[in-house]
Image 1: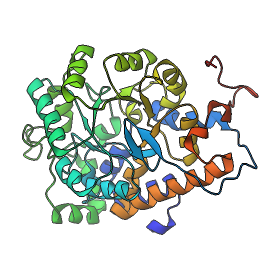
Image 2: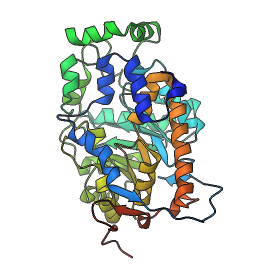
Image 3: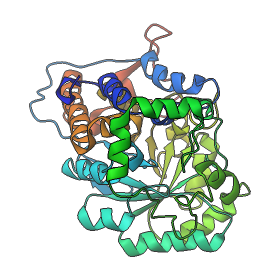
Image 4: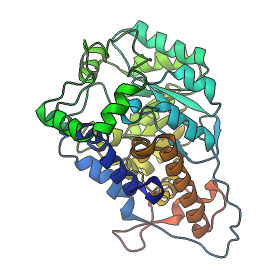
Length: 393
């Protein structure tokens, strides 16, 4: 199977599975506990149908949106994800370059493997910096100042990860950073020697956003220890309000799932929230973001920008979310598997396929602009003809 044979998410996933040692593939693919939320994230989109209009004249389609003051040429963006150079030696360099080509937003993680300064120097497209709230308040302030000095426009605080989720696939292989694999995990690496050769012949693995503070490479700490020992489970709304004020620019909370929390985010001055359950990797049994979207948009969508991630693999999924009021949709595994399969060329192809799907589906919907998508385009599958009810006129 070659890159040109990949035409959808599942194709990229299969190609990545062939190339990655199983512990690393499972790190991307897996989720918490029984992985029921992971399954629900994808299934939620299938329970709402699109209602197209015809004879609307749809030769030219404008996919651009404005999110937290930044204009994107596409209504999708590459969500910040950790450890990307573990999947492919180019890591965030590849993802950022592909996002820049399509003029959409890209995020660098605190657990990113390329420095946010390098990515910001190379690319002018909108960029967010995703970070976690640490027990060391000085570290939090230093990380925000570093992002500001680098020219990052938007700060994105992840609020659903004050402790790590129970990812049992990783436990079965002993996967961690630095590697502490058990016999089963080591055997999987031996079966994929090309990955190992690539890993040791390229730039040494590092976490440049954290290397000053955590010696991951030297083996004194693991990713699991980072979550359990360095992140602050006492984080509260007063802490976040102080950070919003300190940042002084667009500030976004990632991992909001309740309407009440979205309203509080608006109250403290946040410019946006990302409805997300971390791709099913944190609280198993959590509601799917798409199922929760309408409630949150109705509660706070007129006060801040509502975005969504988790489970998105098709252009039609994006259109359904936009129809319910999401300003943009984040992609995670959707670009990580192509990255693992083929580096920048893989991410480029994946985003290009998504763009083509969006243009084609917009034409089939009878729409030429994103703002023409409304709840009137949607019906619940479970009840014949049912629309989204109790919405203000």
